Structure formats: C-alpha cells, structure tokens
Amino acid sequence: MTGLAPQEIRTFFVTTVTANRRRIFQTDANAQLMLSLLNDDRAKGRYQLHAFVFMPDHLHLLLTPAPDISIEKAMQFVKGGFSFRLKSRMPVWEKSFTLRRIEDGRDFAAHRDYIHANPVRAHLCEIPEEFPFSSAHGNFAVDPAPVHLQP
Image (cartoon, helix red, strand yellow):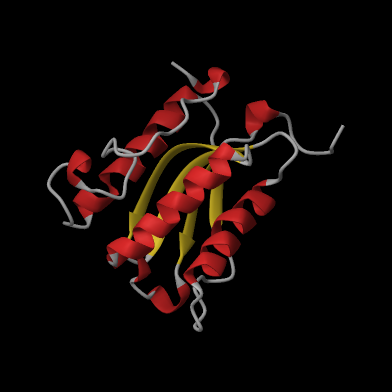
C-alpha cells in the first residue's frame, strides 16, 4: 500500500496561476508547449486528464493522478515540466495551486462544464468549442471520467 487515497476519491479540479498573472498562454507556442507536456505525461501514465483549459494567465485541469502518484507530484510534473520546457528566466508559476476533490458524477460534470465555459465567460470566444486551448475544442484526446464518476 502506498499510503495514497483510493482511486475512487482521487479526481481533482485544479487551478494554477502564472507568476504575476503574466499572460503566458496568450502565445500559441506556449499553449502548444503545454499541450505537448500534458500529452507526454498522459502517455507516461502519470495521470489521466479529463478536461482542461489554458486561459491567458491561468489554467484549469480535471485530472486523476496515477495510483502511485500524489496530486502534489502530478502538479509538479505539470508546473515543473512546463517551466523546464519553457526555459524562461522569469518565474513561471505562483508557488501554490488550488484544488477541489470531485465527489460524484454530477460534481465531475459541473467542473468539466465550468472548465469549458471559462473562455466564453472571459469573452475569448462565443462557444466553448471555438477556443483552441480547451478540451471542449476536440483537438486533443482526453481521458473519460473514471468509472465511479460516470453518470
């Protein structure tokens, strides 16, 4: 036993903010770099990614860490991996992140919908599917909801 919580309670809605609210993801190349990182981490089995959006100065993720990986370690892969690939001389992220454990299928759907609607609320697009750096767009494979969170 690894001491981690059972998979049934390990799906999270996570928000992380760029340092000083720099608009890092306003640049397509940076957003593509993050997409590449998430794809690589998923391929390595570090976590399942169920939904995401990259806003200009923050991102939201709906993810389930691998059974042997804590949420903190999963976010280290995301934030540290992106910082390493970006090779910025300036700080990239605020030190912390916020998270909320997903409780059931309704909660999962509500957070996925929140993520997808974020660029619409920010007036970056008219419908979620238009925003290129969101799982609503359909240009990036995501993992289905864990079985225990499916309707």
